Image (cartoon, rainbow, N blue to C red; front, top):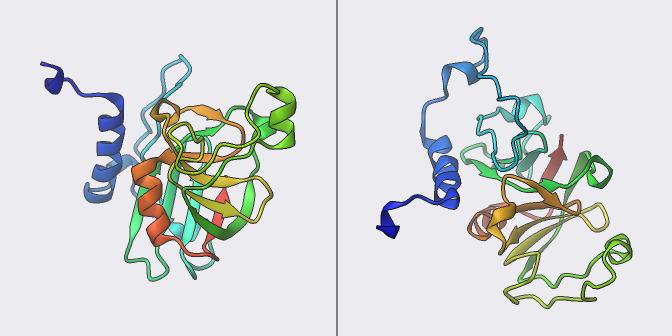
Length: 197
């Protein structure tokens, strides 16, 4: 019977895939006057709002592709340069406002199986953490791929800890399921523009 049960990862991953294929709901359509569904009064701890967006509200063009990270909805949007590809992925986001950086940056490096080194601030908060976790290790917080941003220490990367996706759980980076960062990694280029809102 274990095969009959759906897990959270399957639901979120399926929702991401369906978002690209399904018709845009009436509440997300331009000019819609329908009221958005309201969130419950409890705190949402592990959910992303999958609402398709148009790049034109955020970028002047899609030269080299465009990545929009919405911290509030915990979602990453990607548009290819020719706008033929649009993807929407659930993410993890920074734990707190002081760890969050918003604004424009770009992809400056792409790394397969990146090594992870905690920042000086992380080491101060967590002196027990190792100085480095080599790439390819099953406990590597950067997962299987990383897009390095022009901001020092900031990355869009995978994670082996799938419980983090949909949550405020990072020390500043944006995390994706490993299969999603691998897809994004294949599409994004050095120079892809990135906006965090």
